[in-house]
Length: 392
Ligand SMILES: *Cc1c(COP(=O)(O)O)cnc(C)c1O
Image (cartoon, rainbow, N blue to C red):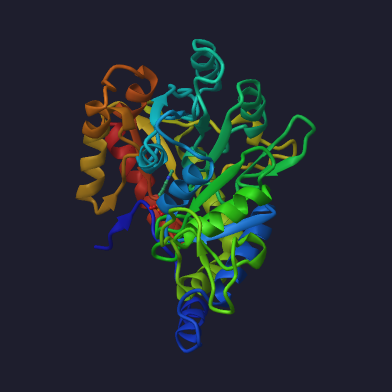
């Protein structure tokens, strides 16, 4: 029998053609596809600038570097995220603190963040890394107001939410990663994400200074721009001005990304369609709870800014449900084990029990199959098996 995973890439003949053409071109890396992918992605999310990088984790690291995170920095993030959202602070020697989630949405609870900020003198914290978890957009306008009141920068981890949006207080649509409120936003192109390049990532921003800094840090801290150099010895001359990395993404992957991006809206519509069918199937079922969409992401016309990277249900016997689905070749997943309970984070002084909502959420959550090529029959089978186990 066929395996049904929780997420999966979708590769077409056009994608393959784009990669092959790039392989046959003059540039495998540092060529024209990189800038073309950046331009297409910036346009897609409505940001001024985009910087394509090796993966989403590299994108996060470049952001913390560009914002000057160091040993003095204290940064707040959510415990319900992939570990990379927190690790990027430690890469620069900073300290991570967590704030608990809102149990209805599993997003960072802005009230909890406010309490944490108000419990310390101003200047104690330097930034905040919210995550558009599962594709459910954080109300970035609200978070920006809080961040401004405390002098914080914001890195929006939008890995789950390309094409997601919320409505601001003026009723304007604000697309995740559009640079309107967050200083920087990051995306990943890992195969389970909306746009797949194998490995790949992107930073978006409206801030020209940060943009230039990211470009330099992505390639060893080297610049070739005459205006930025202290000396100039001739055509070969370049300067390494700060310690950077090689976080570049090759042209073949950018060509794949450009090709994938052309189907982004179709894929997103499919994800929303799949979510609607799950919603309908589970809404009256006792023992199955679904996550709420952030009210800010609900449009007056019934449109929804949730990008549905994941479709999460909560069940009493999560391990039982997981194992039962697996027996039927349905590979549901758990997102996420709370970051503060990981041995590395415990070794830094974080402890189990510190964030009860996150831990309670983790005890019951299960991500069901969600990807554009999931067929109606496959989804019906998943629903049938979930109901069969929960109804027992
Ligand atoms: C996937 C993901 C990342 C990391 O992206 P990679 O491309 O795998 O390095 C970071 N944060 C979140 C929330 C993610 O889902």
